[in-house]
Length: 135
Ligand code: 5GP
Ligand code: ZN
Image (spheres, rainbow, N blue to C red):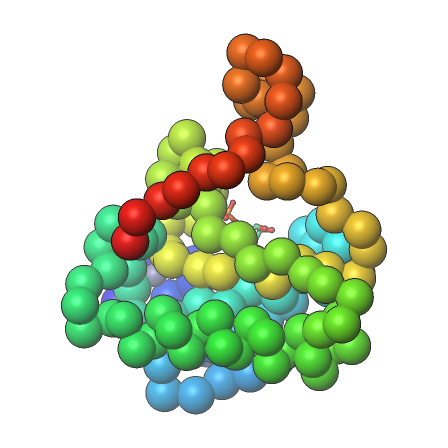
């Protein structure tokens, strides 16, 4: 846990926040500045800055976080209409809070593709397609 980290403070109950879900590993709560009718943050309680910090031992918690996103989406009534789960990772990934978290966003139509702006598109102007990432 980090003394100054806002999400660690929320996990330690030093900053009062209404939990959407809580267990030993994870805490979920509504984003303070929602970008959609449903905008929930799913936060591993252990302080990791982002995915770069996640090791083999963290795999179960990361998997659990994704399953929790689907469960909360179902509870909020957006499982069928669709939703997006996002991890902003590092400065150029748009991460502002340096404690790993998953955004669950839905309840309205979201920008197709990756939600990138025009200037983020490839020089040809089309969305990146057929992207293959080996994991
Ligand atoms: P990031 O850009 O790091 O992926 O997203 C951080 C998110 O945390 C933002 O959507 C922001 O609104 C949210 N956030 C920052 N501070 C707080 C807080 O104190 N409480 C809650 N509920 N959300 C926060
Ligand atoms: Zn933290």
